[in-house]
Structure formats: C-alpha cells, structure tokens
Length: 70
Image (cartoon, rainbow, N blue to C red; front, side):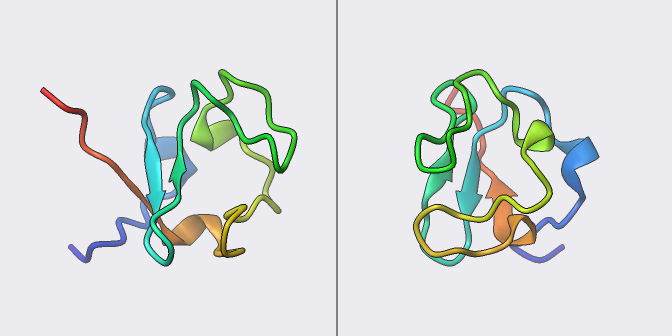
C-alpha cells in the first residue's frame, strides 16, 4: 500500500489524527479547524466534502492516518 492510504473517510476512526501528505499539516479532531470554522470534536469522516487542507489546499485524499503514540 502506498503512503497515501486513500481508504475513504468511512475507514477513519473518529479520534484519528490525519496528516497532509503534501505539507504535513495535521488535522486533529480534538482541535477541529479554525480556518474552516470546523468545531472541535469533529472527526475527519464528518468534514464537509469540499474541505481541503487549510495550509496548502490539498484534497482530503492526500491525508493519511497518523499512528497513535504508544
């Protein structure tokens, strides 16, 4: 599998942090996205279809799941 998982939003756990493969911006559901006015607690799967990276404008398909720190 490539670095970009492209598994669709249904495969993303609600608490999963997602990282842009273009600019490395991290979407953290605990923080939401103030640029797009996405409320804290919003999972990646619940982002609007037209949401893009607030840093580089990359599409959601360019995001990959970050592994949780153990």
